[in-house]
Amino acid sequence: MSLHPAAAAPARDLFLPVPFGACQLRNRIVMAPLTRSRASTDGVPGPFAAEYYRQRATAGLIIAEAAQISPQGKGYAGTPGIYNREQVSGWAVINQAVHQADGRIFLQLWHVGRISHPSLQPDGALPVAPSAIRPAGQAYTEHGFQDFVTPRALAEADLAGIVEQYRGAAQHALSAGFDGVEIHAANGYLIDQFLRDSTNHRSDGYGGSLAGRSRLLMEVTAAVTAVWGGERVGVRISPVSPANDIADSDPHALFTYVVEQLNAFKLLYLHVIEGATGGPRDIDPAFDFLRLRQRFNGLYIGNNGYDLAMAQAALAAGRLDLVAFGRPFIANPDLVRRLQEGAPLASLDGASLYSGGAHGYTDYPPLAAPRTPA
Picture 1 (tube, rainbow, N blue to C red):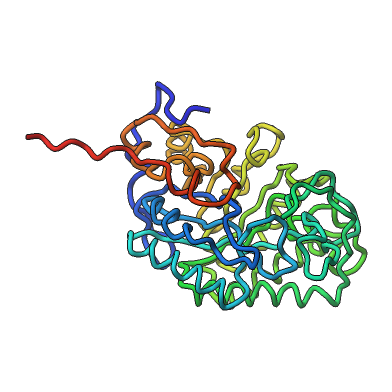
Picture 2 (picture 1 turned 90 degrees about the vertical axis):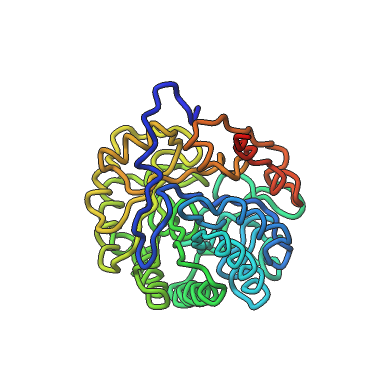
């Protein structure tokens, strides 16, 4: 989809500053979290990450790539963590670079649950999930793609420890100098697995009813906001996305309930993937995203396939407060300027998305500086 349709409306409103909790963003454009697999095997952000994020700091808000909250939370080769001192130090360098460029950056807190593989887990253990249901698909491991396995169902007694992992990760993110955090409750990962009735077949207090299936998310949100306060915390959801073999029999009832319950925490924002993650927006035309926008008391970030005209129209109609762009930020570190000036966008190199190193990461060139009249 082109980000520059011929009939694009003037982009003035999208580029105005906007109050954002305790701070102000320079514009309403959000860089969505993008897994790039550049971290060390120990989960420390890679040596080029500070430059990568600094280059993109003209976004109103950067939501940094998802970081696993514990060794158990890892699901892909080369992803960063936020659970030890070395990782905190690595992220601190990144945050310093973004702040020196007058940017704002949040960290997405992540536990993948069953979307992992024993080769990525401590001591080769099984991945964990609400129920022992094997997902379709393959995990991206240090040894290439390998079939998913049947996960271990978490015991009820285990879940306090999971919540504690989120609390600890939130504290580490604060120590690393982030401006806030986002709880990843989307895309078929652990929290989303608890929410959906296709992956949660539990009969205890974390299953069954909407309240039971939502309980882990609410406990995690309570733990994270106890560290940060609600005004510096967001939650990401993907109500109709089938990503990572996930589904629910009544997503409208589920996510209306979730949003209403989240209001108790006075969160800064709700980040919503509208449609299939990285795919069509109309996968479930009957789902009413505007209803979520109306039910939520904080800011609403719309995500998935927005172009400039769509973003402006949605903003003007009050359907969102900020708009997230994902892959366009990879090949266009100066995406904000390109959108504002109507400049052409560079295309990303798919072969280098997860390849490691600076190529395809920090070597995409920005637009040339405007020529100064003689």
